[in-house]
Image 1 (cartoon, one colour):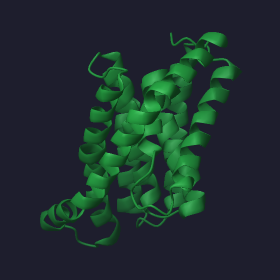
Image 2: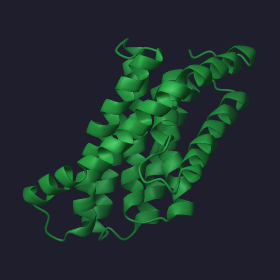
Image 3: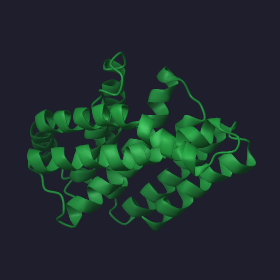
Length: 224
């Protein structure tokens, strides 16, 4: 957790400050590498099987497909809902990995750019927070709890990262007034995104968690 929270933001800052915010493929690959290192270190102690890695890959694929299917509806997508479900079911590290990888892969369809590493970090944080809050007992598996949590973190955390990022990406000399304006103008889009996340969690969380639990039991993927 310490590695993810420290290394990823520093990498994004390094790309913005010293690479002119143009080497986004390089920065994205660094973020992926850092995520994978953290993932491997964490799961090395759990001795993960190929079955577990396949399930995580499927979760990434489902998240990417969810973004593609709803591509023509601005902000209304099941992406963060699926990432939160991944974090709740398989833990914080897996949630971060699913979020970061899904952002990177889906942008091959939507377009890579300076926003890619920011999205990777923001989506990864959603899965990380879900896993941590569930482990600590703050978040419960009931769809009401998941929906409220998903709506709040989407609006406050994801929007709180991506709104100032839009200023840093496109303004040569950003200031606090620009960032505040970005927050204010981003409220409608963030509200739609939060509502979509809450709605998808309301309808998808229980059946998906039930199916993922069955897979975990059937293939011995009980979280250690």
